Image 1 (spheres, helix red, strand yellow):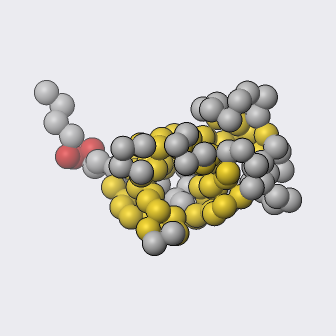
Image 2 (cartoon, helix red, strand yellow):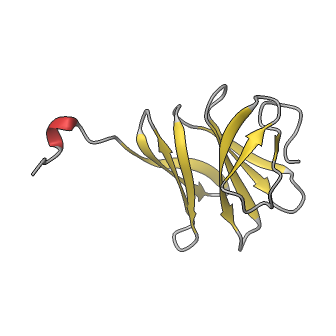
Length: 120
């Protein structure tokens, strides 16, 4: 069990490396990324309060939370860059990075427009 007494309390029947878990309070599927080197678990909560929540993977303590655009479809942590990537339907791709000790959205890449696509 991770988190406190809010909508981002989560549980999983699998180990912390699972690709998704369920939020107990909000009764929703959430998406998970893991920074094994730092012992962090990133949880993307898509519905009631769209957020990425950062947990200590060992203690389950909530470290930070960051509001994101609605509609998260996937979450991936890249250990080489230290960046977290969230695929969100409202913004296509959100890039999250720890800057000066705080997690921030450092880039939003909009979805391609249909007219920009080459259908060859």
